[in-house]
Image 1 (cartoon, rainbow, N blue to C red):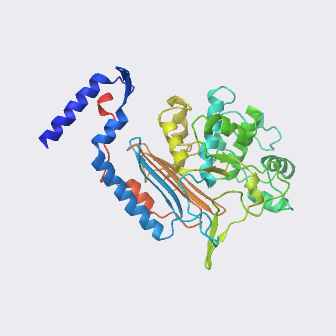
Image 2: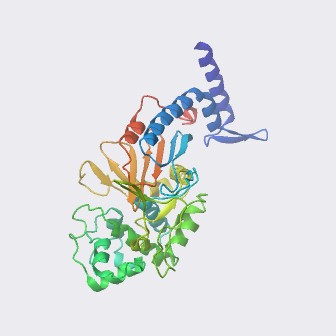
Image 3: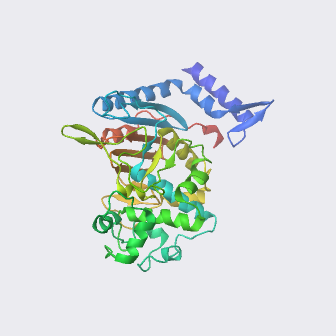
Length: 394
């Protein structure tokens, strides 16, 4: 033990001499990376952590988990694995790959919020602007962008409105169609703006339309050019039905969503509501989500003073011990963790950022089977915590 401690002390002293406060420094023509030193010093703990993750997720896979998983801690990917099949109904089964894109469903909201934050940081809008500054045809008074972000607008659900007034379900229902229908039908809101938290997809659908009108770009193009491409998220995209005259039978993707019925899985069909963007319909991989997490942690898209807004409670009240920031949930049951669930048309997902322990977990599935509580038990288990990557550089 004394020899190991002495060896560690020598390494730490060498690191202190060689590295600047940024974690990397050019020395004699060689760039050294403190992350790799951290990894080497903690091989045993990393291996134990990976083994624990494999035990948990292989067990979940035996009980029906079908999808991909990535777990990281202290800036290192500890475990990533793909389980099951792209199409559970196909006669010839095709295995899921780690770089397969799944629909994020409501986990798309964190990206829509990021787009709004980028525009705010550039001075192109303000969180406290009235939404009608950008969508003047909206027939509701006093709703701000911030209230959309925090789900405090009080607006009615667009899916209920579309079910009532959109007669041809073979024709895609779009963001612009939603706005036009709101203007013409003026459905009664649930309550006045800022009265209470009410999670509602219409908020983030309207935010996607704000992005379009402020930027002058299609939402899918803005997201690709300003978030996905800069971060190297090469397998991420917004599914668009903008140019489609009819709704296709199935989503044009390798990884099909599935409804889990009593008689077995049933491939989910495409839906006319999939033409609405912002609240859902983004596709991504666990590895791209990890890149996004790293960008948030290292402030690659926004300075910390701007990015921190996403993780502030948007409501004074905490319903069921939970609150909502800008595209992220938070709970008193999981202090220091920011997360979001996704569930839509044959897909479920869960993304968790544990900023207290610098942990990240993404689970993407292509079935409607619930993601079990064992996932929360796993990330909440602090019996094996890796030390900070660069303690001597603080």
